[in-house]
Image 1 (spheres, rainbow, N blue to C red):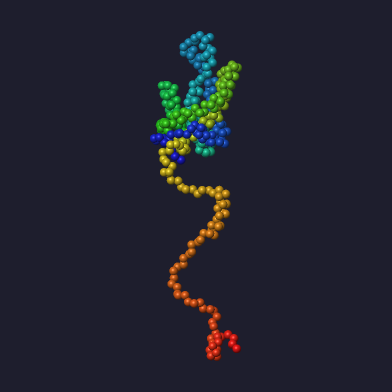
Image 2: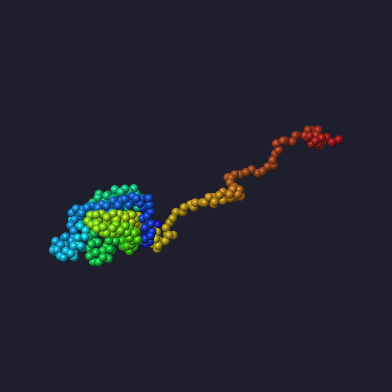
Length: 349
């Protein structure tokens, strides 16, 4: 196959449908395993945070009232008292485990795409490189936050620019944090639009998976369920998006494999003409019908085709002499000579 390259990096020109097909092929026969892995990752992120917020959380409305004094309670209580509760511990937990868990999920889907043996517990392999995973997560969030301060669009571009950093670290754990960020930036040159379009191509599935979560949240609001139970219902609704999340992770793993040159798709226009690439000739496989026809005509050809005579070594031969018969004629007696008769001839009267 050939690379379609622009400068030092590979430019992906394949349509989003072909890239999604790569993700589906990698998940073939492993959907259940991938869904369970993503479900464990999702619960490890959301469930402890909900528990910590329920135990140690402070309502944002109370913080507002404490800082600025209670205003008209009748007006603002209905707004601020319905706000979710947040705790400092849940924020610390999210900060510490997000990087290693993201790295673990990246390792899981990258190994699955490469047809390697994977297990659900592989999503915790990121904790073996806790320092680099945490540092890369902090750097990535910092750069995205700084660009978001300008406008939302620069923040989205920054998120796409550094989207391959965790794949690079998962592929080579010896690389540094800044090196992963720089290589991701280089890889995404000319590919940001393709990545954005690929992400948008999942919007239909995301909307469809969000419908059950919206229905559950509506039921909770109609029943005036608040606090931890409301958060728990939201978490349960988010479980319906897990298959789509696994689908997206697998597709993005294939996207990285193409960018890294591990999976090269033949694209047009190609920088090298196919005639310039030497290809070893391979024998063509004959169909059974052609083989039978050749067997039929093989024997007559063998009979009619003259064979070249084998030349004997040149030797000097004696001149040919008349052949001698094995039986020698008997010699004539004196009497036969006198009469003139040949031997064995009857005498004439």
